[in-house]
Length: 427
Image 1: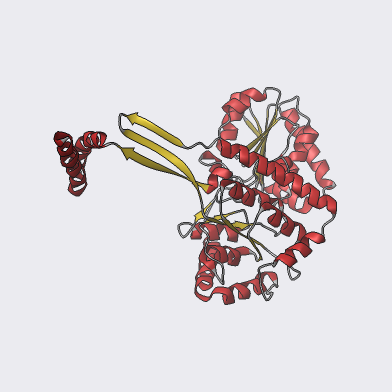
Image 2: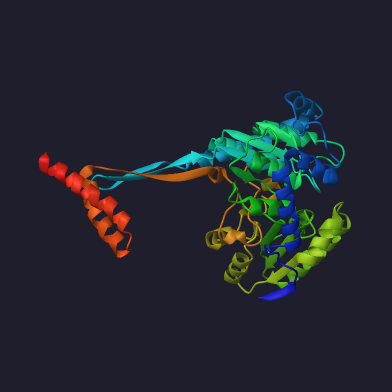
């Protein structure tokens, strides 16, 4: 393996300053409620309307501002997300099995009761995040969804975001951003009941708020700056590879950008293509900073080494620009979502194709996938037994409890032995 270009690799590190700021804000927000919400909203977003929640008429007015094509395109994207979520749900089957005579075990999937969805809107109004968090929750059967999105500073809402939130199925829509939004949903400020789970991406303060609120309520994942890794062989198109790398670089100066290829010639062709494309890119200020600081290019000695490098990086998004896609798809294990072949790209997954774009970053793909319909379901087990089976199991249980010196536990088993064996003798 040879490193042609080296750069930073983002790991989830706790920023003590951010941690302290968020902790102080959450304490203030819980103690002072909507007064604190208004204070912080003015400070950070120059926004403090009579009500942060939009009425039905205000939602209709927002949607009315959009051209027909924008509405139809959002409907198209949301239908894909909804169809895929329903197909995923169909794979999640209830279970009931008799593992021994009279011993019946199983599980059922129970939806979370309420979810707070955060739709980011800082550098870009990412209204596509509405369908990614709200639609899977609705398909899962979540009864109540509260959704928050930050205002356009000093101006109010972004109409396309409101349309996406409403069409996705949000029950209440608030124009409120950052830590105050997370507090409103998690604590249940004003007339809002607290939610059971928070979902959605955001800036470092939103991510830190989710981390600190975990336990008070559930969260989906902690997602940091976006990442892309592309594995490309010499048959790939360097221009297309460079284009896709820069597509993610525009997100954030801290975006992770990695290419694994198999020859120095291809590596340099792709780097040169990237530099040429950057020159004409409208978002080059952000993309060039990301590429300069975090861009990595490896030349692997073999497909096996490429797999090892990719699995170690554990990217949020993984693209395969290779002839033998089957080999890589079979052997790659650590990624948020994989895009197989040049015909698909991260932007499709982010916006329109139907898979989810809220995905693990900072190597979290080693142990978790992204948001999907199953994130909003609790898989809960159950047990049923006959009296005869209970007496049989109780004998083993009693001995195990005594070995652990948990004698009260042992008594619960002993009482069943005596009760059910006595009943058996009298029958």
